[in-house]
Amino acid sequence: MAQGTVTMFQEFLGSLGLGEFNLNTDLYKIGLITAAATPGTTDADPGWAAGRTTNFLANESTPGGNYSTGGADITNTWAEAAGVGKFDAADQSPYLAVDASNPTVVRWGIIYNDTDADKKAIGFIDMGASFDATTGDINITWNASGIFTFTLS
Amino acid sequence: MALFNLNATAHPATITHDYAKVSKERMIARVGSIKASLALDARKGGQMSAEKKSNLKEEVKGILRELGAREEALDKIVESLT
Image (cartoon, rainbow over all chains, first blue to last red; front, top):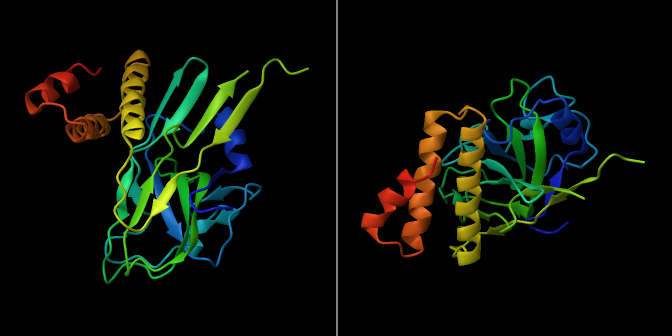
């Protein structure tokens, strides 16, 4: 996996069919976690809350400085055009501005639904390596095609 | 045989630790995403919170400013969004 790779959880597709996500109006966040957990597409019941089978909150990077518990709103959007549904979000430059009190270990970003009571996760983003956010910003520029797309064929 | 195929694709993002200028292509694509999102919400009866709608419109304003749109045109463009 390379830095910036976005991977969707398989369970997300199941939840989507059950109407458990509104990709346009719900509020989504990126929570930062340490290298203590390695997210994978097959993770069972992934989310950001106690009670989830795979609870990434348990491995959250220590909040402080410009990083608040749970992470920041990504200002997501969803729309369909010409048979392609696109989930997109605001570019985050910086997502986390450097600060002496920031987390010192940031390895993965978990994209999850903050509106949902269960805080179910959609997927995760690879930060490439453990990064000390007291030494520099973390900027996230999403792909021109969005975070992910569904294409009907 | 499946009734239809739905192919999901996750697209790689760019993570940087120094200031990185967002490409013009990406900025235009983002404006398109926001416009389509607001239009979809309007068609579905306007479930989006006023705060989120306002944030999205402000984001469009910021991107257009970055792309060189004239200041006096910004409000008119944003008003035209659903």
